[in-house]
Length: 79
Image 1: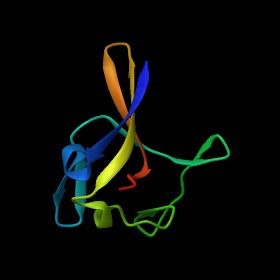
Image 2 (image 1 turned 90 degrees about the vertical axis):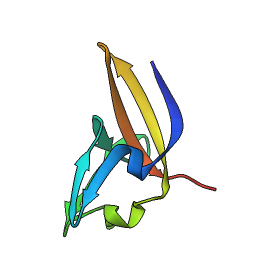
Image 3 (image 1 turned 60 degrees about the vertical axis):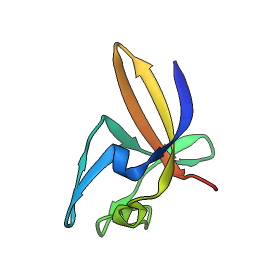
Image 4 (image 1 turned 45 degrees about the vertical axis):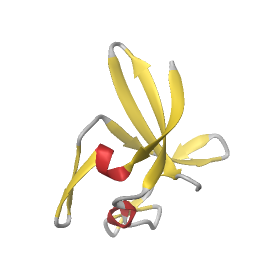
């Protein structure tokens, strides 16, 4: 089962300086033509410094299986 929801960055991560620690099981996805695409370079994902998302709402797909929840970050939530 899965559902999309809006979650604040601070619910998913704890930030201490330049270090982000996930508070939950998190996957970060960039969706392009139906497939997952992720590029890690220069401490960014697809050119986005994730610390710039601090305090902002994200669009998150929550997937539940085998008693666990995984949080797939799809991107920033639109206002």
